[in-house]
Image 1 (cartoon, rainbow, N blue to C red):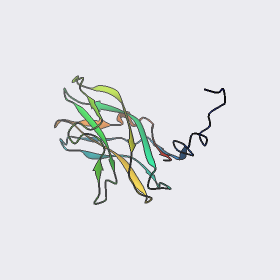
Image 2: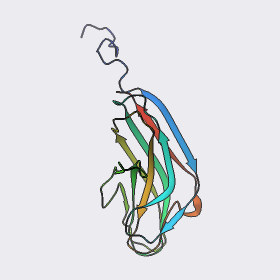
Image 3: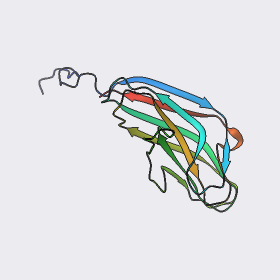
Image 4: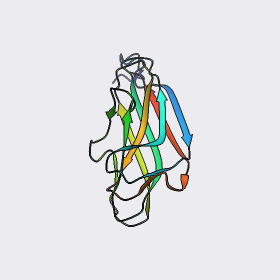
Length: 154
């Protein structure tokens, strides 16, 4: 109001919202399943937050393929191997659902999530996927993918 420039510290914001670290893992492996329950894809990233108040932004893009007239569903799990495994998406529909229901359909899967893990321990984020009983493929034709995790400081 007085013409002065507002600063983060002047507003009492400090360092919140800044990116503390970025981890990217790339690959090109694909995997197929006929499962109607979520199964893991060979796509994961790990990060160790510097503070329990930090949030972790995860982002992944890869291709999928359905062999028949069915749905491809994908999600992201936090710490899938541990006793505290959490499906960050919907328990049934995950984060992504390709409902084109066209045989041999290919499409881009893009998922993102801002997680609040409340830990300074190593965290693994992993892609899981499923279909409706016929073959579905995560990362068909083994195209390149990149899984990114960013620590957002609170």
